[in-house]
Structure formats: structure tokens, C-alpha cells
Amino acid sequence: MQRSCRDVTNAWSETLQKNIALIGFMAVGKSAIGRTLAKKLRRRFVDLDRVIERAEGSKVREIFEHKGEAYFRQLEKQALADVLEENNQVIATGGGVILDDQNLQILREKALLIGLSAEMDVLLARAGDATKRPLLQGSNRREKIEILLRQRAARYAQAHVTIDTSNLTVDQVVKKIMGMLEVRKTVGCKP
Ligand code: S3P
Image (cartoon, rainbow, N blue to C red; front, side):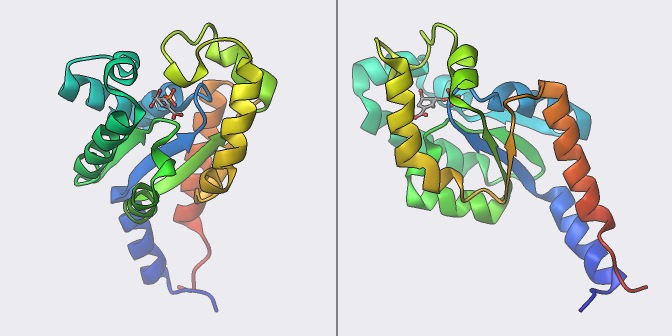
């Protein structure tokens, strides 16, 4: 049954306020896309890894090196909960934030969750030398990515919508997201 225009308008104004969170594998472009999207939507942009780095006073790479991944995941969980207290933001998450069930649940509740994906060769190219990414250090990067992607695929698939960014520029992805938001706004209703 078609919804009334008032219902649609209400749903849209909720969407307007709601956070938009980007999830997806390392180097897929979450930060660059998030920053540009936030500018277009005139929203605050939050990069979760930078929030963690500010709180801890050290770089993600150093946190992994000196305190380990489990410690980093605790910081990440706390930072995510704090950030999601606010509405109306565009949030770029770290690629592993979805490993925690509660993180995934509150992201789905408090944000429109947009998944970004890319083909392996594109991820490898975008990762560059990956010195800042502790989980991609050393040799056999392709194999490392394959293993992590296999472990995480079902979790990335929990996004409300997913965009394959392989052949798209940052601006093209942002345009696509803006188009999706527009479709949600104008979805048919019974006057
Ligand atoms: C991680 C991704 C990184 C960063 C940390 C762990 C992951 O963020 O949070 O190195 O587990 O995928 P990016 O996705 O921004 O590289």
C-alpha cells in the first residue's frame, strides 16, 4: 500500500537528521568520500580513526604497535558510541569497526549505513604503500586482503545500501549517494 505524503515527509525528515556512516574495507575511500559528502550536505564530518588518535594522542599505527589490536578495538568502540550520541553527521569508520556485533547494531540503528566496496586490484592500488595501515604491513598484501575480506564480507553486507566504487571517482560516488538520498525524499506517496 502506498504511504501517505505525511508519512513519507516524516520519514524523510528523520533521514535528514540521521547520521550517514560509511563502512567498508581499508583504502576503499571512506574518508575522502565522507569529507566531500559532508561538505555537500553541510554536515559535520567525523573520521573515527582521527577521533581515536586525538583521544589517545598517538597514531593508529602506533596504538597497534605499542598496545595491540584488542586495545585499539576498545578505543574504537568507545569512540563510536560517543560519536553516535550526535545526529546529522557524516561518519567515516575504520574498516574493522563492523567486527564487533554491538558496533554494527548501533551503526544500523543510528545511521544510514552506506557500504563502499571495490575490486581487489583497485584496493591494492588505492592502499599505496600502506605504511599507515598496520593490518596490511609486510609482504603478500593481496593474500592479507583476501583473508580479511572473506572474514568480513557478511558484516559489510549489513549496510543499508552498498556502492561498488571500483570505476568511480570520489565525486561520482558522492553524486550517487546524493541521488539515493533524493530518491528517498521523493518516493511516491498518496496526496
Ligand atoms: C582497520 C582499518 C583502519 C584502521 C585500523 C584497522 C581495519 O582504518 O581503523 O588500521 O581493521 O580494517 P581504514 O579503513 O580507514 O584504513
